[in-house]
Image (cartoon, rainbow, N blue to C red; front, side):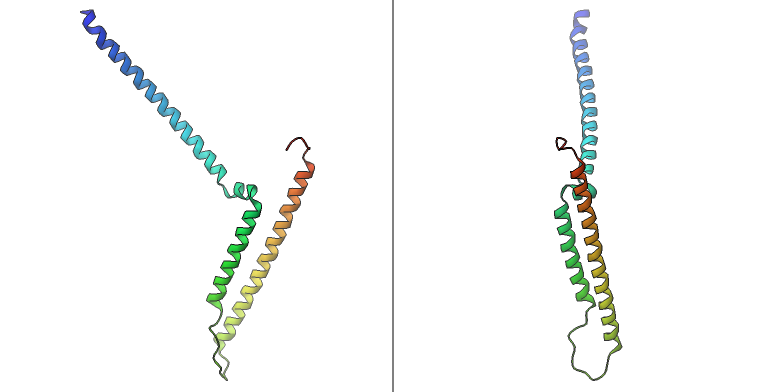
Length: 135
């Protein structure tokens, strides 16, 4: 009777081994997936992207600012004037708003310039302070 149960026991033990192997590999896959997720989040974080590609980030910010400025200006600026003798208060309000937006834009450009210069100084300082063999 033991010989009849031996194949069943060996099959059952093989099934148990396979289930254990599948569970171990499943855990390994879950761990690796979490690790990849964390690595991707670190790699694609805005701070890391700017650190790796500062010129491209500055260019993209500049282009975005210019396009946004033009879009706001086209929304705010008055339509072409028709000759009229009377002064429209809405035109005066639009020109004031347009001038304000222009001033804000200029201040944003100055701020971006100051940030760029500060970053460049910091970058140069880091390069100067690093030992030549540490790169």
